[in-house]
Amino acid sequence: MRRLVVALAALLVAPAAAAAQPPPEPVIPPGATAAGLDVGGLPLSAAAAKLQATFGPVLALPVEVRVARLRRVLSPSAAAFAFDAPRTALRAYKRSTRDGPVDVPLAVTYNWERIREFARAVDRRTHVRPRDARVRIGLRRVRLRRAKMGRSVDAGALVVAIRARLEDPRQRRTFRFWRARVRPRVATSALRRQYGTVITIDRARFRLRLFKNFRYVKRYGVAVGAPGYSTPPGRFSITNKAVDPAWSAPDAPWAGAYRNEVVPGGSPENPLKARWLGIFGGVGIHGTAAEYSIGTRASHGCIRMRVADVVDLYPRVPVGTPVLIR
Image 1: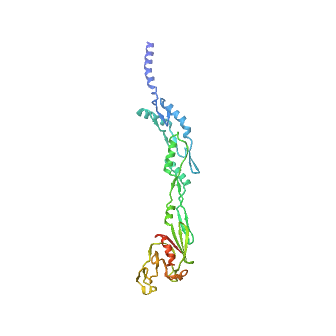
Image 2: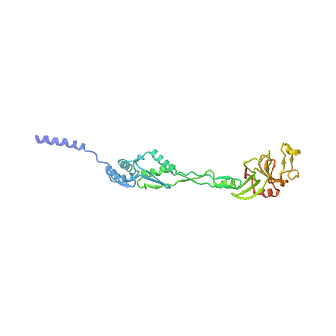
């Protein structure tokens, strides 16, 4: 009887013990990889240990960015970076169970804003502003300062590059990142076209100077405005041109009998001889019959030239030519 009771007790304990044993650990299907590392056929815990041993040391290294001569290092702690090996193993198990052999990315986390700020700091340290082309016009010299390209880091693209290295241990942790070129707003070529011809008028020395492609070409003697009719100083341009221009006499006492009249071009009574290069209003460059006045203050605001000189100058100067009067 006693033996029977013991046997019955053993039969009752055996199922209970079997029920208390944990279920077998899931095994990742063959062919599964994580960041290229084979974890197929391994239980989850073994796969996690293999992932940590293989990738943990690499992912603990900082990412170094080289831009021009600058080197900046982003440490894992600065990016709030963390690698979760067990989660990566579970990801490989679930994906390969559902889709067959797959290569899954590592399960990592990081702080996006810290990476963006790092990229912006790299851009600030390496940014080179573009330089606009500029022209300086003096009476005796026209100078062109050429434009220069700027350089700038595309912070968004740099963030993408850093993310790739944080997420994939197969990529090099140290890499060079190139800056994009930033074009100036004012190009050298644009100013070469705009200032291909320049005229300067020196009222004190009664000189008109002609420049082509920023080089001095020729000078001419002129007459300028008389006292009370001073030729206005400033930066202007040639607004119109005419051969044997008509003269619209102004409503002014000095116009005499021609006041408010139009004197045809070529007329002996017309003071605008041979050529006209208008500057603004009624002020312009023209030939004069009173060539003895060249080198004096004699006009009513215009710039007078000898007829031969204005005929020589006329085809050299297109409409739009900058004019400096000083």
